[in-house]
Image 1 (spheres, one colour):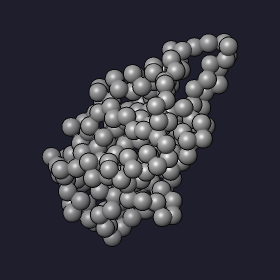
Image 2: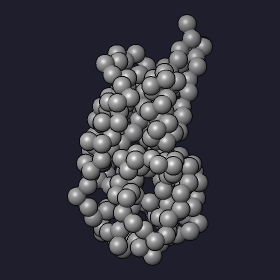
Image 3: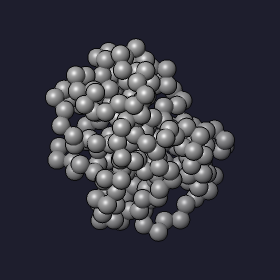
Length: 217
């Protein structure tokens, strides 16, 4: 029997790494797997439609109530795995890279790079903590590699979980703790009361272990 598993996530490296580890271990002569980078609304739509079995997203302690309400309205549930402190991601050569902590005011002169969520997306759908804080210099993009390249090329920054593993971001970017009381809550989304398949449970278990290993506090 052909093995199947599909996943939609916001623009993270840790879900890519976990996905690769799980399907590599699963092996098999026949399989059909799929991994989709999406906006938050795209993750919701994929899980609701069944295009993806699971979604990987994050909440903050500021946005959790609104995001959970949006998920519930769509017939979905969020399952928290770990809390993490937000960090500023910036180039290894950035003049602020050796700071012990940073505030958003410290970064006011540098361009802020973020993932566009589409027109009229609610604040709780943004992939960056404190996304609604006004900035004078902002650049929206839709691709993870483009975001990393823009940060490096423009000496910019974004706000992230700080979990940079697996592919290229770990060498291109460094992270510094952000001075804020807001915390991130990383987890996954299922249809309400869904029972996980064997592969889905393996992914969730491996994701939890990877987040515990790489999360920054």
